[in-house]
Amino acid sequence: MDNTQAQEHIIGLEEQLRDAMLGTDIDALDRLIAPDLQFTTHMGQVIGKQQDLDMHRSGLLKFRAIEAAERLVTADGQVGVISARMRLVGSFGEAPFNLDLRCTRTWRRASDGQWQILAGHMSVV
Image (cartoon, rainbow, N blue to C red; front, side):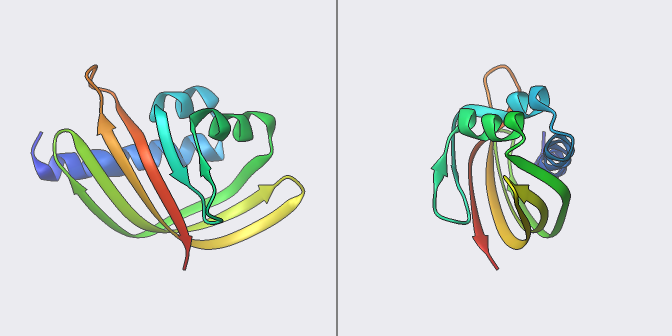
């Protein structure tokens, strides 16, 4: 896989992630997120895979829209990093949100060939 193919692959994975988040597809999220995930939210909290899955599974976190723009991707055959401006619309518990964020995610290719999110960070634009 050359760098251009790897970059396109990361964008495709991001679309799979977007669809899984919008559709609350726990199986897809489980497949796309590494067991040792470290994700820093826009509020500075660090969460792991199980916390992330539990928020989706319980309905605590619901997305109505996820729109990506200004995507910058660096990738090779083993690691990919994407930085994108994200508009997220949904609710957390009873509180609605409509956020403009910058999201950076690191994707890693595991020994079985599966790509997963290893780390991420969001900040308010």
